Amino acid sequence: MLPPLSEYELLIYGLPDRYPSIRQSTLVVIRHGPTFAEVLGIVEFEDDVTLTVWEDLDFARGAIQGYSYSVSQRGERLYWYDPQPHPNDPSLTGTFPHHKHTPPDIKRHRVPAPGIAFDQPNLPKLIEDIERDLLPT
View 1 (cartoon, rainbow, N blue to C red):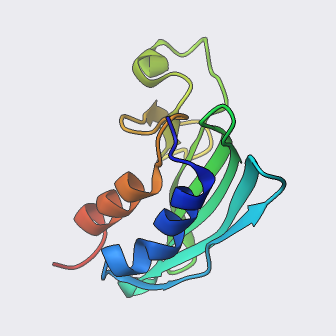
View 2: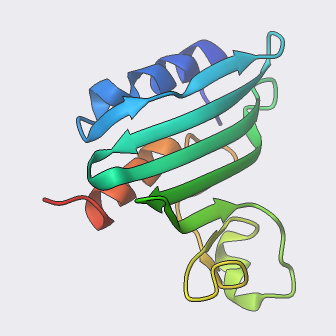
View 3: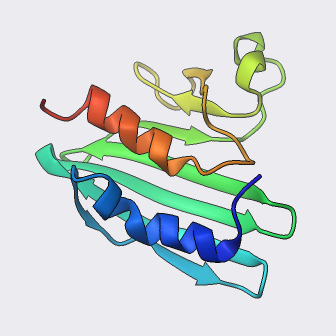
């Protein structure tokens, strides 16, 4: 279950302190009432890597209702995540409906997205994956 809205705001605004690899974050939590919010913005890392974020959050249910996460480098989209169901693709069953679009045919090539969920914050995992896979050590 997602933490309460006030804690989620602390998580979002505290990401640059928690992850020194973040050069800049424009993420904002936009409240749409006492239990609904959106998170919008871009997280910038070194080597011109960016994470573009959109989340639609329902804190009464403790869940992310929808999301889109996209990772780019030097203006080229490397991959993205979305929860659009693809029930006819058995390779995605393990993380249904969560999946990642990857090259070579980024629009149609989908792989499972372990660790991405509706009931937990996804940004820490996404940032840790970027640090591990894309940033110089």
